[in-house]
Length: 119
Image (cartoon, rainbow, N blue to C red; front, side, top):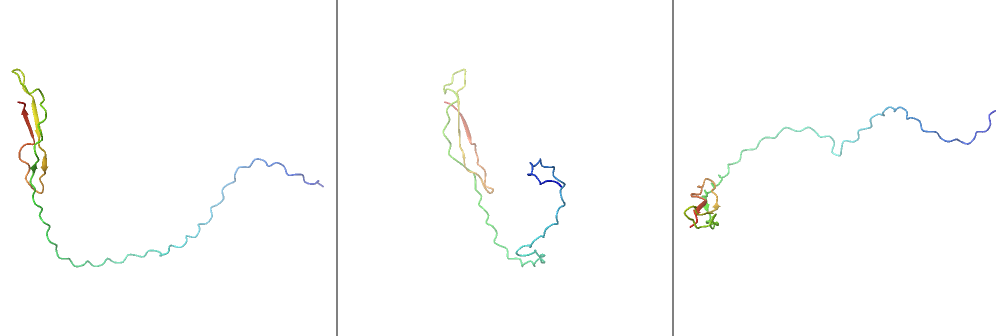
């Protein structure tokens, strides 16, 4: 007859994993929600009677262009003294548009830039 069993020995390295088992059945879907499933949409209702037309929109007034004041003359490009062989310098000034035309108003008449010769 064999003798008594000895102390348990050292565990060896772990073996390779085995094949994967089958997937289980799909679980229960659960309750649909507090309000339940959505029902079908009913037929479209009848269109109401047409209302009376409103008042016509007011016609906006025409606004004509308006020039602003002329700005100061800029400094001359050359000395203001002209001799026989050279021309004198030039200077310029501008005027801005103060009001732009709107709703068919007329545009500004005249120039927005003046160029003068230094005297």
